[in-house]
Image (cartoon, rainbow, N blue to C red):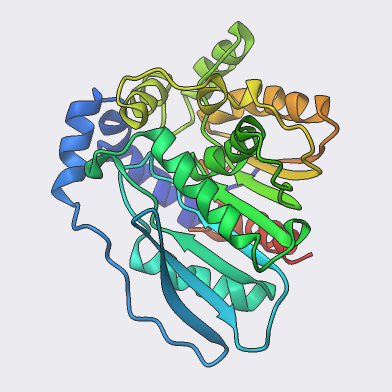
Amino acid sequence: MKKSLKYRFLLRVVRLLPAKRIMAAPKEKAQKLFRKAYKGENIPELTDPDLNISQDKIIGATVLVYQHKKASDRIGIYLVGGGMLKYPQPGQAKEVAQLAKDCGLDMLLPYYPIVFTGATLPDVYEMLYQLYKKTLEDYTAENICLMGGSSGGNLALGQISYINEKGEGLPLPGKIYAGSPGTLLLTEEEKALAVKQEKTDVIMSIKAIDNVWDGMTGGKEVPAYMKHLQLGDYTGLKDVYLSFGGEEVFLAGAQSIKKRLEEFGTHVTLEVGEGMYHSYAMTPFVKDAQEGYRHFKDYISA
């Protein structure tokens, strides 16, 4: 793939920055740096002629609600990434409003608990479970789409295992879009591929993956499926779209996750963006990523 001039320039800039070193730092050091920028929930005042935008609370966590003024029977739940180190940024809240309009579905943007509130990964899973349960009061399961990038992609896929583990009989969402879903490496084959991918990934590394997950779990043991999407229980899940950048470390787990999903009868579309970066399809910073972004929008619109 021939990269655009802007993309090549941005890659050079990022490689000069300490981003990869920060992500690979011990969790205490990385969290200290993120804490300096932590300002709590920064929710912008949003208005739109086509949408009613409001706030709800789920177990104390804020959820931005985007509803079409002309009623829609479909809804998406957008889960941001960031390793539980930051809330959705104002720009992301605006982007979700545009997604709702472009794709013709209502949207929910949860400001789920992050590490600076004392939360760990199981707290996030429970909050999202309660949010999904409430969403089922107004929308049929087949018309609900979970979507997320990076750790948000992990939460989107992992929520299926959580629902199945709960055993309350909740119907599963009609589909899931997971962009570069974060997961710990499981097999020696995955680890060997990750070593190769480290050379081109400008943000993440094998060490960074371990440190981020240590921070999200607070060093406590959690169910295997929260760490390894390759071990999830996807019973009853019908359709998933996976996307990975061709130059990112998390690509190492792509085939294992796909295989695991297919073992449960799930229809899986796997897109690997040649020359692309982590979570490119949900964060199209350059024109090179626009095709993946269009595929993302087409999928959640259908």
